[in-house]
Image (cartoon, rainbow, N blue to C red; front, side, top):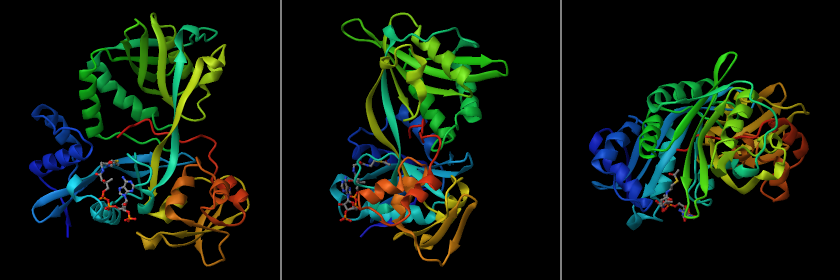
Length: 389
Ligand SMILES: CC(=O)SCCNC(=O)CCNC(=O)[C@H](O)C(C)(C)COP(=O)(O)OP(=O)(O)OC[C@H]1O[C@@H](n2cnc3c(N)ncnc32)[C@H](O)[C@@H]1OP(=O)(O)O
């Protein structure tokens, strides 16, 4: 029998970090790494399961905010460091942690990156956003025309100060994007220190700085140079195009790999659209609607006749109920339901990546009028989260 406690001091945080790392088959943090790691522990947001005095399971959240369809930004919990000691697994430790976390988290929505696809659906998380891993043949990548703005290389101290400001100003550009918290930047800047060859360039247009990209280049045994784009954000398409012109005209580079949204129009930049190759499409955002009425009210809807959706939530029954969704907004009603859906699948359709009609085809939801629901929940922009946590 385990009990769940909120952790409060540095020694407990370090034990938490060590337990999680062991669950992932990584070694404990060194003293040097812990100097950085401790900055990612936010009081009140770190819990652990105990068997007597022995810590046996961990999780925590980071306070951030997330963009929803229509552009509103809502408070968001980034769930991380989920781990159970290998000698305590499959006894309900994670289930206890998830129940506690969901019933106490102050934010209306939580997301996570899942280590395995079968773990989190039972706790109400749905697969809400995917990412494309792209490889670009840089030697053949020709973008016609000239840049319209200016690209400048910045030194590490400048980038440490400037990039967080720029990300906050224009990095929240699509559904699923999240703001970055101080601990995230601490880890990011530490990793940057290790990657000596990480370079950041900033783009400026008529209104000042409006884009940046960080990248590093490595050389393989055949003397081929491979660029990995680490972080990329832009405020307008001039900045986006100019930064791609910069990246693809760099000397010596053979290939470029980058993560992109499913609808990123990057292929159209190039004379030969085939220089962009999709290596993989992978699941990225697992989303849990913690406060369903608040989250349904937060997003915008497309034009279609209203639909009544009946939501079932075993862990948070306050969300149970029928919601009439129309292009004007959402209200709770007693009317008969058109569609019945569990909360994990409502999470899956929330950002517009998944359609009700696809869930119906797969016999995952029941009802009628799926086309209207698809039109209401459609997002003109595909979701993406460029912030790994
Ligand atoms: C957001 C992140 O941090 S992702 C990182 C997640 N962590 C890891 O992958 C580290 C290695 N794994 C672990 O630490 C643990 O095995 C965990 C956290 C995945 C699961 O913890 P457990 O305490 O074993 O889970 P618990 O006993 O509560 O299981 C609940 C249910 O989920 C199922 N389940 C748990 N883990 C898995 C899994 N990896 N694959 C499939 N099903 C699983 C259990 O079988 C159980 O099902 P049931 O209710 O039908 O019996």
